[in-house]
Length: 393
Image (cartoon, rainbow, N blue to C red; front, side):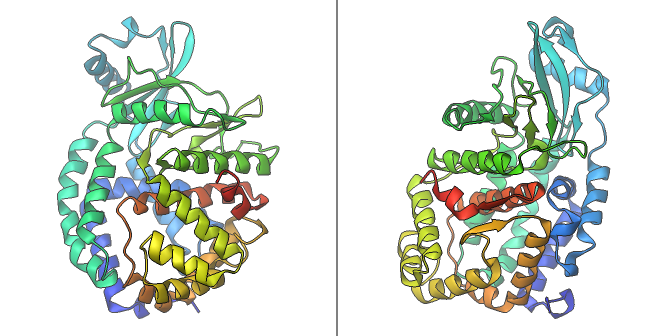
């Protein structure tokens, strides 16, 4: 049986309560919940969290109210110094997408279709104020993750949150990743327009096609799409960047069979040697080499003491099952089963949490892997997922 909230260990309960209170008190916390809605499908959660998808959807609906077109015009004029009509040939009044953090409109510049993304007014200031409240999590974090540098992790959270609200930074990173990923067969990363992009506006090439989040989207070859997405994320990591925000709405199914990847500008730096070591640990895990796995986790990654790294090897085998050890179907029910097993072994996981010592940028890797798994589960493909991750190693 999975652990219920009433029987959670006191330290974990305190952390969850502190985090929940922070979310309720902050506008940015509610935005974060709204953004999470697209990543949590009803069939992918364990029974103990059955109400979560509906709660997140309510948060999304409350946070993703449309930005009035007059406000969009004001943002563009402030960014460009001229009315949009003097810069663009066309700009649709109706948005292509409305999210808790931004809104996207179709435009035309010099005869070419572009996507014009504007940041939600007032959001940056609200998030900046809310981030000052993060320190309340330091003590409960240390109670669960006793060996971890909680202050460094919280600094990374602050920096990431602010970077993700700087659309000029996003455009620059997107341009960098577009170059790094051009060798991934079947992938298209839209080119950003650096001249028109700034802190509150991002203009980029418009990719035509339905996204994976669209209920009307038809995926003719789910496995092919999955392979492209995994290749993109592994290639980016080898280039020194982690794609931190994979989500169904960022996957464009183009008419020519290629896969468009939006949100590539939301990325964090990662140590390439650390990426290589993590993939070598996966090789050892797939080969049943417990000692080799533990040596990499303890010595090269510095995540756990050797004895605990051995325990982590066994726990991962139980919780993950065969999803990374050979050909396996990845869908919502498989993710739900993994979560159920994780809850069943919560006590063992918390014992390891007390000794884990991650680097701050490891947070981005965990987020990326979790969100990518959610996206891939939408496809329901059967692949050797571990082998795909290692293909570019």
